[in-house]
Amino acid sequence: KKYFEWALEINGKCVTCLKDLSEVLLVQDKVEEAERTLRKALELIPDDSDGLFSLGVILSKKGDAQGSIVAYEKSASINSDDYELQYNLGLKYSERGERDKELKCYSNAVDVKNDYGPALLNWGSSLAEAQDYDGAAEKFVRAMADEETTLKAAVNLAMVDNLRANGMAVKGDLGGASDVLEKSIGYLKKAIVEGATRGIVGDDSDFGSYLKTGKGL
Image 1 (cartoon, rainbow, N blue to C red):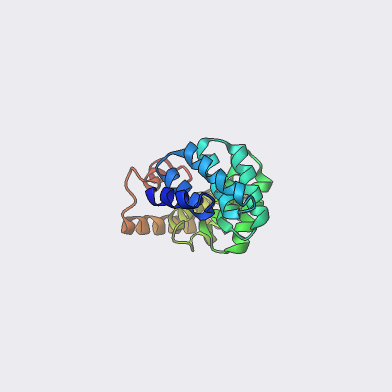
Image 2 (cartoon, one colour; image 1 turned 90 degrees about the vertical axis):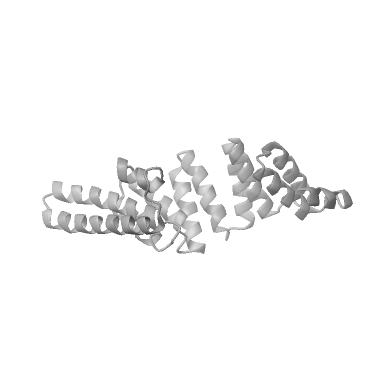
């Protein structure tokens, strides 16, 4: 922090210094000061996509959902290829219940980075909430390819396949239901084994919580 403050004493219009100082302040949980510092940078370069994204993060942390969406949307209009930005904007739309916009953002993120697990995972979860279990399953399978989301995707896939199997059984397709359940058990076993290997299946972990409660992640 002292380095950036020293640099700004020399050149108060150093945009990079202002943005970096804002990041440091945010890490220190000095949210208001981080916002003021970043807005100084944006006064100098209003169409700075990275700066607008950072502003969205700060406003989100402050609880200003509308402000964060405006910042993310402006950033996305400047740089539509930022998949993390598209993902974050999708999360904000999800909080507001704007499903179509949410799914479009996840789709945009995956168009840029087709194995981006966080977007695929949330896309699948949103589809599952809308009872599109086949679509959800397809997204969870793809999310399993990303190491960051492998475990959660496997668990959610097992959950969705259980729902699919129940639907088949109700319609009298017991053979199909049995096949889907067998796959479901396989996904769950894979998740448990991999989770144990990574040492993240304790009761206090997200994964351990799912195993205890049966709630999706």
